[in-house]
Length: 287
Ligand SMILES: [Zn+2]
Image (cartoon, rainbow, N blue to C red; front, top):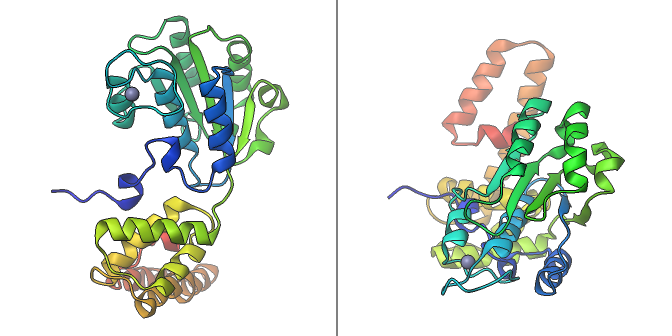
């Protein structure tokens, strides 16, 4: 069986599972329960705090029909109906995610907006999720404004950004804004303990404390580091090995790389990268 990375395996599937974002969960939950639904939402926050996750849960809440097929809009999507399972597995036709970091132009946005005129095929609502929305060009933003202001009643926009200051005011003013906070190290620690217990991986609390701090508020980073630490520690997490892993990635290799780069010393760069690989350290984390 193929191994699923922890960050994916433990991605929250409903609001109750979302960690450390109580204020957002409560506000969205109330809106869904009372059916006071805005047509555009903007989720802000640093990377790995759950912007895409909250967007998918919202899409499920709007489209869930319950286990018996008779359910309505809900703050607690069932997780078993067609809409819920299709959104979870990324093949719900009425839920579209556009990554503005790689699709920044007016053509991509227009292609998306062209779909807006058609009613949802499968669900109650069409949900357009635009991630890293601040990356869109001005022309792309302008193309979107009219639909964003008065979308058809079956269409919801979910915008997400790590940099809300780069989003034009005209867009901000049309959205209901939620700020997802970086997670406190204690919150991350607690969650890691639960995940590792479920995974039956033994870990001392000191090693988890190190990872929780190194994750800098991102649960996704915390889980990726944990994956890495499990591999590094041969299936268990101990303070000494985790410290070695984090320390090595954070300091000596990075400094050697920067030093080599600043001196345009290609041989040293290659040598350092080789050493990284030999020690099983993540190139991505080093970067
Ligand atoms: Zn459902």
